[in-house]
Length: 418
Image 1: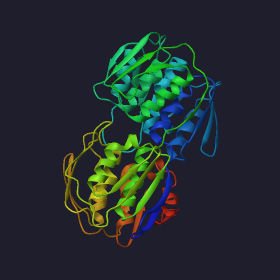
Image 2: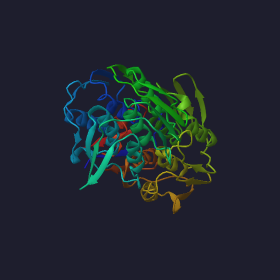
Image 3: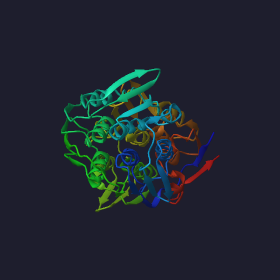
Image 4: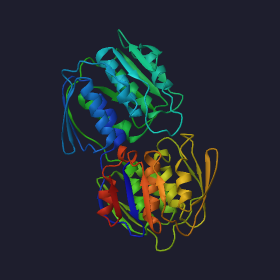
């Protein structure tokens, strides 16, 4: 079992160039199967989830070559429409291939997806939308079987602004007959990036970033080049690490406009933040961080559920009481027990967590039970007295590219133990 061993107490000070966004690169890689051509994707982060996505593409018959942070994907000779259980169970985001494979092959067979156990994440919105586009779907023995002689545009309303469902609709509808309109669509920056990629290929999509997306089907798409947007959750994690250790940090290759909900909370806690076109500069307060009255996770542009756990670790050493309301996933407080091992004072009642800040945390052996909870453990360990061992870091590697190297370059005492 791999782990991080972290000696707390060092300030995080320096510069970090933020990696490409995990939640943008995965649907864009899925979209490469649509055009049957050659694609070049720049700024791809070195993540376990990206490796699994590459395995899926190869399993479908695509040629994939990786050179540093650049991926070359040739889907011309794609000859498969099935994703086996062994791949689907490793990553929930693999469900995003469903819409793309159906659009390309008019059929698809995938098993039920896996991923971090952070709560109920049903794919019924995905399947309901695909049925509206003309896909016949049957579920049996843990597999989803899809067939469509012809995809036809329709007006689709999402009961919840699901990012994955919005992406699957975009992928399936961009080559359907007629026009598809998605209302109550997800508004995340990663949706905007997917639209930019698809339109570059020749799709006719408009409205991403708003709650209504219009997709006019086309008959042909073409291979293109595209650069992935920076990862706003990773950026917020590094800002939080600097804040937790009374440090300062400069983030490069970041979009401050994607991070307003997160930087607003850091300012409320007493941090000074300066933004430029593609940089964010944070200086933590000389005294203790201030508690936050209330943090409520919401779909974009609200406060992201993905950064809730690192911010809870941050408020655990702030002066005063902070309240968290988790509206997205019912099981996203798994990090609480681990933080309490380090001395945090947190009480949970359903989807509400009340955090009473303590003077300091102490080193302990803790587990990363899921991706973002693992990041919270690292943040807490950096600020804690003594040595902390974070186990099960395979989850962290799913979303953070060599996090120990970036933090070490800014003064952290962190080592990966194989």
